[in-house]
Image (cartoon, rainbow, N blue to C red):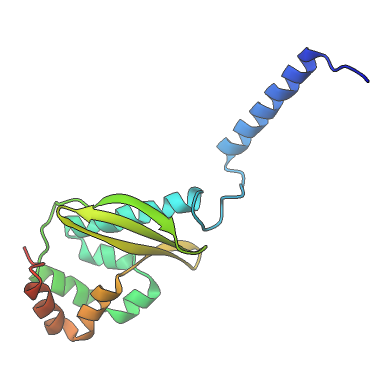
Length: 161
C-alpha cells in the first residue's frame, strides 16, 4: 500500500475549499436553485412575503396587489382593491413579522406571520419563473360580493382603523 504525504492531502483539501468558495461566490447553480424549501428560492419567497407585507402596512395597496398571483389578480381588480383599502384603511405602520414557513410542495411556501395581536398564514406560489403572493381565500371571498360587500365585511370585523 502506498502512503500519501500529509502535505499533498492538505494541499488537495485547500484546493477543494477554494473551488467551493469560488463556485458559491460566482452564483454557480446548486441543488437548491429550484423552487422548494431550503435554498435561495425559499429565501426569495420570504423576501416576496416581506415585500407584500411592507406594502400593506405602508399603505401601498396597488403595489401589494401587483405582487399577487394571476388567480388573485383575476379575482379582485386592482382598482377595487385600492378603493376598498383606501375607504377602510387598516392601521398603517404596524409591521407584519414573519414567524416562519413551511414548504407546501415544490412550488408553494406557507408563511406564518403576526401583526400586533393578529396572526395568520399565507402562501407564496412559484408562477412563471418567480414567486407571487397568493391572497388568502377569505380575502378573495370578501371581494366576491363586490366593493360594497367587501367594505361591509371589513367594517363588521373591525378591520378599519
